[in-house]
Image 1 (cartoon, one colour):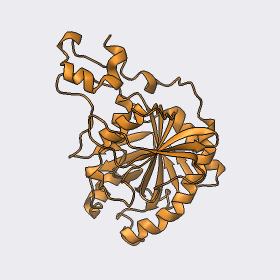
Image 2: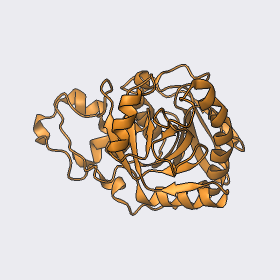
Image 3: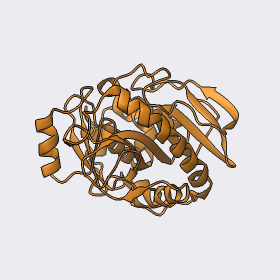
Length: 289
């Protein structure tokens, strides 16, 4: 395992494949029991803090949302010492008042995926984490304040519905999602948030709005061209937020994320298969002694 460590992780979404301003850069390849992560992880110094950056879809945007090796991504960041993950995610707006180029810091998630591994556990080791607050409130507040300071129009709170993709929604789906009261729609927050919580890593999303999905009759339907056009503008905002927020992240954690597994493991200790103990040792060894 690499000796290079970072306390803060950034997962870059569509359009964000590197972080400007990183110094002392090292690129590390991390192997995990769940395969290879999306790409090599870049570790460097940003505003005096060590940061580990992972391009979610791989450099060149090679991996679709369903194919993302999310377990490997989260495990790899955990192995590098990451305690907090900032997710940068493109999304569509499901409400009139949330316009393209706005930022949303969601506090709730709604899972509409259907083909993704969403837990590290199973095969003889059962754990049930609390997930009523699926994102870290402390990290979310820091992102909100930083987004305001860069001059972005930012909305604190809201529900992010995560669909399977890679297709965009039908109009029928979009209308129903709006009736459910969700605020933004995307394809990547799940299972990232679930796996980060199982790994006892704080997780929060900087949801960058690119479009009105397909429900807005007065707007043109969402297209790749529209998304990319607004992505490029959103990326510059995201980079500004990162420069502000990274040095403000405290070293100590007081949120529930840090102890999510403390009472979650249900399996009798002597019944846990040795192979599972070994595979998940990075996550659970402190609770199995």
